[in-house]
Structures are given as structure tokens and as C-alpha cells.
Length: 396
Ligand code: SOE
Image (tube, rainbow, N blue to C red):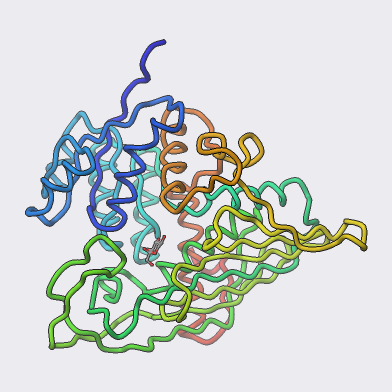
């Protein structure tokens, strides 16, 4: 059988997302029958001293610190941006101008203005684009989407979503995620972005209005950084005595109305003590409900309100059965569960499928879809600042 055509990938970033994306590109053809075979062509990052070791460890053929020059390499087919949010626009602009397909970490950008510009450039280039909203590719989340599509929960009335972490305590120095110029916002753009995307995907509904938003920063000063993170969210960052001002939120909460009539609540927090990476949602409909908790990512809890009253109750579905649960057949037998990194491998498979003109297993957020999420994030910030409801029709 003829070998699949290759797809030369260039990755920008070698921190936490640099590792998850490198793993995804190197694993995908081991577990999926890929229509294009990803080649780890070039990895690019600022830290010249660490690049050679990183490239060797993850199997990148080339490495550089010059992303602008890298864009001129005619062999590269896809540029994968895993750099901080303020670099998404300039890097995507250069990649699109060079005729590349572009994948970008979430959120699309740190600001709505940058996101709008990225979308316009992608439309003008007619390029295929992708945004790494990886949690859609947990089989349990994809099953939730299917339950809604099949009418198993009836008309949706309530959407409750949360993304709770607790890494950002006083010991963490002033990393880029706490700087508005680099990140755009704090927990909001980092975490609410995920749950807005997930609930839009699962419900199939758009958010039409945001209200009651609260944005708050608990820790207003942090020690300046003296060393970079060791590949975790903030692990290994060392701090000086001198401090700097935090210019983003530690938490943003808001209420929402959905296009299908549902109402919802969203909470993103970085100091939710006891919750390490707890994202999830609960969907309540007229015929049933389901809920997801990423810290038990292989399971979806389901309540069938049409079941006989005597046996009605919450069931826990182990979403690892090949054929029934998306992506599951590529991995292991029933209940031999998968983890965080598998969502990225599943996403790499869907990116390759789309680039080979095939349908993705699960709907793929491109720049246009991710821009819808970015508008919701902006509406919440406006609602928090002006203490009023904000209709999405007013946020372009
Ligand atoms: C930090 O909050 C972070 O790394 C997010 O940026 C990722 O998107 C999330 O998957 C894990 O936590």
C-alpha cells in the first residue's frame, strides 16, 4: 500500500503546549491511520540554549529561534503556534502570507481586535485554520454532543460550566499569564475560553447575551520572574525579591443566554483551592441531563428522565468503547482509560483529516468558529466593566 503523503509541521513554542503538541504530532500516526503523515520538520522558540535538546528529545528535524525566517521555508505545510497570546496575530499573519495552513493554541488571541484581524487574514488567504480547543476531543465530551444531536436530553434549559484551577497562589512569580499586554486577560481568556467553546459545541447553541459578569484579581502584586517555567503551567519559575503589578483577572464569572432558549453560568478561577484542573459542565434538558468533569475525563454522567421512575437515576458511562465513543477505537480496550495528552493526539488526527479534505471525527474549531468564542469573552469583559447585560449582536 502506498505510504501516505507527508505533512511538514513547524511548531512555535517549547513550553507546556510545545510539549503537548510535539507529543501529538509524534504519536498520531502510531495510533491512527492518517491520510497525511506528519513530519516534525522544525521547532522554533526563544530559548536558544534549550532548543537543540528539545528538538532531539521530541524528534524535531530542525530547530531555530527565528520564526520569521522559518516562515520562508517552502517545505513547511502547517505552522502550529503555541506561543503566548500576543504573538498569535503576528505569527499567523506571517504564516498565512507564506501560504501555510495555520493551527493556533487557544484562545484565538489575547484581544478581540487581534482575533478579528487573524480571521480577516485567514479569510483573505483562503487558508485552512485550526484552534486547539482540545477538550472537545475527550470522547466523553463528544458523546455529550451526540446525546444532544440525538434529542436524548430534549430541549436544553440549563448550562452550568466551570474551569477551576489552584496553581496561581502567592508563590508564583509574574509569568506572562499575569500580564495584560502578553496574555490579554487572565483566567478568563485562558479558562473561560475552553468552557465557552465546549458548551457551544455540546449544546449546538450560540451565546446571545452575557450579563452579571464579575472580574476580580486577588493577588495584585507578584515577584518578578528570574527563570522560565520548566514546561508546566508555572512550575519551576523562580522569582526575585522585586515585585510587579498583575494586570489581569484571577477569576471571571458571568451569566449567559443561549440561542435555543437555555440560560447558563460560567466560572473560571485560578485560586479555587483543591481544584487542580477541574473543568466541566452540566446540561439540563426536558428529557434528561448529563455532566462532565475533566478530572474524570473518561466518564460522562447521564440522567435519563424518560426512564421508568423506579429505575431513574444518574448513570456513569465509561466512554472508552471503540465504535460507540469517538476516537476510542484508536486507543485501548474498554476502561483502559486515556489521559490529557490523548485529546491533543485526537486533535492532531482531525487536523490531518481536514488538511486531507476529509471530515473531522469531531467538529473542528477554525478561526471563524474560535472568533465566536472570542466575542463571548469580550462581551463578558464589557459586562464586568460596565455592570450591565451585553448582547452578542453588539460585539462584532
Ligand atoms: C493553564 O491554565 C493551562 O495550561 C491552560 O492554558 C490550558 O489550555 C489547559 O488545558 C491547562 O491549563
